Amino acid sequence: SRLSRELLPFTPALTTLIMVDCDESAAAVVVVKHEQLRTLDLTNVKFGALPAAVGRLAKLETLNVTACGLHALPPELGRCAALQTLRAGGNRLAAWPAALCTLTNLKTLYLDTNRLTTLPPDICKLTKLGGNDKFHLYGNPGLVAPPYSVVEAAEGKSKRETFAAICDWFK
Image 1 (cartoon, helix red, strand yellow):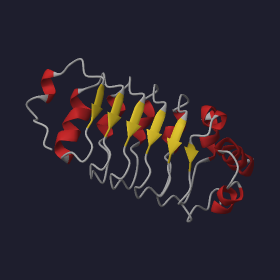
Image 2 (cartoon, helix red, strand yellow):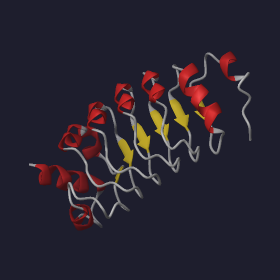
Image 3 (cartoon, helix red, strand yellow):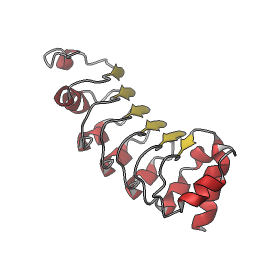
């Protein structure tokens, strides 16, 4: 369904917004206008590129950009210090930007079914990922740094063991 652009500026207290399958331009307006958002679900909004203005969402705790056709995540997303959950599976991401290794509150990360080839060593600074089972990398067979074989070798083990194996590979 279409969300009226006229309605968006009149919702200053909005903290949760779900815009699944929404028009790309309406979703971009939300990112610019609603800096108080804590939860933003943009599943299946075909951006190609997430607006850099997402970095203004300082209170954002949960971001879902699953199946948005993204080729990259903007480095400005690293300014979202409150971010705890990032779901970015089913895109075309080739790399995890080093600038996002500052997201130290991140507890849940879904990067499954992308085109990842590299992860920066600093991903190991996201220590809260290592303490749970919400770190997903499966479906990235082109991963070379660390090699996908490290991820495959941890198959059947917990996600925290996968995270530990990745960090061990970087040492």
